[in-house]
Amino acid sequence: MAGGLFALLDDVAAIAKVAAASLDDTAAAAAKASAKAAGVVVDDAAVTPRYVVGFAADRELPIVAKIARGSLKNKLVFLLPGAIALSYLLPVAITPLLMAGGAFLCFEGAEKLWEKLTPQEDAADEGADMDARAREDMMVTGAVRTDLILSAEIMAIALGTVNDKPIAEQAVALVVVALGITLLVYGAVALIVKADDVGVRLARVKNGAVAALGRGLVSGMPPFLALLGLVGLAAMLWVGGHIVIDGLNSFGIHAPHELLHAGMHMVEGGGGVATWLVEAGGSGLFGVVLGGIIATLVHFVPRKGH
Image (spheres, rainbow, N blue to C red):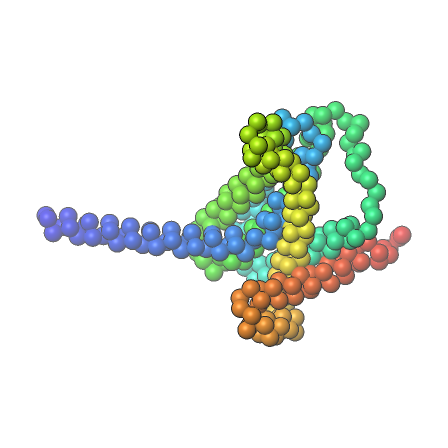
């Protein structure tokens, strides 16, 4: 009897070890997938704050919360089932879809770069004739629609990272990525959009150091948001270009990949930072060129019937 009990306990311990190892593997896969999607995450965090500009301070956090719920719905209700079905039924399509998503990031990045380099018409009056509720609904809808594109790229990148894992492990990893990235992005956005309000309150405190900190927050947020936008733009071009280069390499078009790695090899003596800068810069430059070509085709090539 005792022997049977000990045997049972040994079996339970073995099962627990297997489960723990599986959880470790899933956590590692989710972390790797999240890291791969970092460029899109930065852009998501950079894009979202503009959707709360012009609203009353007490509506900023509710608007961010609405967009976050929409983002989570995008990832878990629409994109996760589609990604798992694709991985199970047509895994060969994952790389082409990743490349298409990467090309779209390059296109979006090139468009944003063009907007920064050329004067644009002021669109501040858009929605000015609407009441506050209708305008809020319009902005939330637009933000969730933009998030769907960015979330699709995040989930595609994550899927491409874990597509060699069992289906159940893929699903868990994608759920972890969806929850973690949504919390990270919209938690950061909430802090960003309320930082100036916190600064105003701190500036009114009689303590000189605290008041100085508050004034610094108020004056520092506009340049910080501008810098965040530039970082997001660079991340889009770098990540998009890198995805396309890797995809081309897997389909036998090796020249961009080999050129990039030759440049990285040349600066190996400078350490990891130097090789990363060459890799990111080369991928970003490739992204600018590819995005510019796509933007030209979309906007300037005449269409039939026009």
